[in-house]
Image (tube, rainbow, N blue to C red; front, side):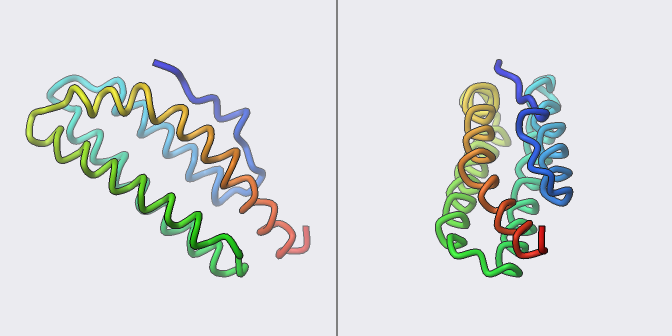
Length: 130
């Protein structure tokens, strides 16, 4: 399983960086969970992801971020996919959900931060006079 190196993904925007740190901690907890704990740990990660995305979208709205529809669509797609895997895990079918957590999420997270969130951070900093 690949790891997520937060030090390489810092955006210098505390409200996003703090959420990302929490996301990674919850992702690691799900990835390392026992079979009995996996559905609950995955649920905690998925719930946090949805809440994080809502906070991030509110921040984008507050600064008039022009690519909000595209970014929000990526969030919605990701949460829908995560919820499908969570439903499978809750039904006792964890193989694909574990593969998603271990193999897909680390690469997706890095790409999302670098391709989407870094631009949001730049625009927010400009809007705040930085």
